[in-house]
Length: 112
Ligand code: AMP
Ligand code: ZN
Image (cartoon, rainbow, N blue to C red; front, side, top):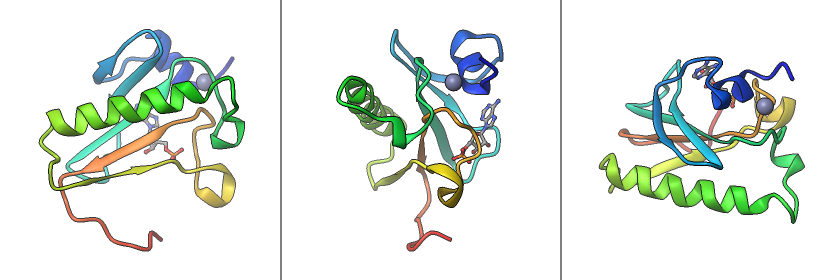
């Protein structure tokens, strides 16, 4: 499948890794929007939040545990933001489920 994040998960495309295990990869975003900007993905291809199911949602739970661990390790004790852009209106540009972990600055609300 011609999916850039599947290729990052398999190592075919290089990335700056922040965490990896058998199910999940976390790597630094190429175009950081905050001092800390990491993407967390399931290694298994899931297209977006719209495709989260009873069967695969354990991967989402696991990703949130990894995000909490990374945030603590990276000193984001003052807070952080996790974002999952979904579909066209959500601004999703890569059709492989991913969670942005953003931190190191104060975030605005509402987002644009
Ligand atoms: P989204 O717009 O929510 O789909 O997020 C996709 C993110 O992937 C963007 O923040 C991009 O900067 C990032 N991105 C795209 N290709 C790569 C890559 N090869 N390595 C790291 N980050 C990437
Ligand atoms: Zn994929």
